[in-house]
Amino acid sequence: MRGVHIFQRMNGCEWDDETGEVNGFIQFGYDGEDFIAFDLKTLTWIAPKPQAVITKHKRDRDRALNERWKNFLTQQCPELVKRYMDLGKSSLLRTDLPSVSLLQKTPSSPVSCHATGFYPHRAMTFWRKDGEELHEDVEHGEILPNHDGSFQMSVDLNLSSVTPEDWRRYECVFHLSGVKDDIVTKLDKTVIRTNCVSPSEFPAGPVIGGVVGLLLLLAVCITGVFIWRRRDNGFRPAKSSDSLSSDPSSVKDAVLN
View 1 (cartoon, rainbow, N blue to C red):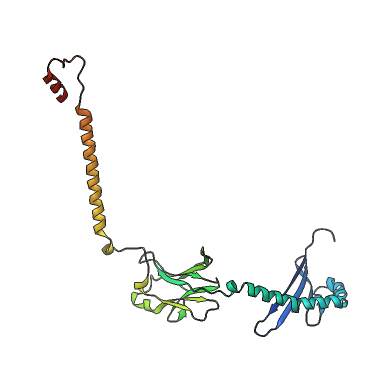
View 2 (cartoon, helix red, strand yellow; view 1 turned 135 degrees about the vertical axis):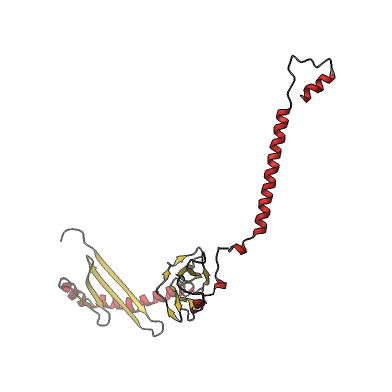
């Protein structure tokens, strides 16, 4: 058969560290379709297509090859899995809990439940009301990486139709895979962090002082320019036709004029 064709092989093993059970597989593909697979229990090959029957019979007769495949899947492959598990235990079994905050841009904006600093990324955050997870008026954000290798995520809750008396019925839940206890944050207006400052909390004293200082500085600058202009325009040198050498008073008059 002329042309370009693709031959694929996929093999691997599964090891249960609690029961010690081992399972392995070897599969071959041709042009993106299953071609032949190895049965570890019977040490024979399975041909899902008629075109693979000849290859199946040939491999079934090669008992030495099948024993080598069995040894690889039940001995060598699990040992590699255990080795890599030990080497990567510090990262594979690492769990870091996040800090969770409630954020809101303005009093009319949705309240965002923001969790940052958690690891691994297998986590979920959601809002619930009276113990039931909410799906309406909720917007989930993506899980994003932090610069230190941890992750962050947020979920927003629209409270436009919720009365202040009902806020206590809502709570944000953060769940991290592998951790038994969730982090639950009650919806409380007093703990919401925001950049919005009400007029009553606006620092009027420092602002007024700054404005007065700016006006004083502007007045000094204008006065300085005025004095400089008077000095620059007030002195007029005497003309060459004026006679100043004979009468000292004429010099004074010329300077003052």
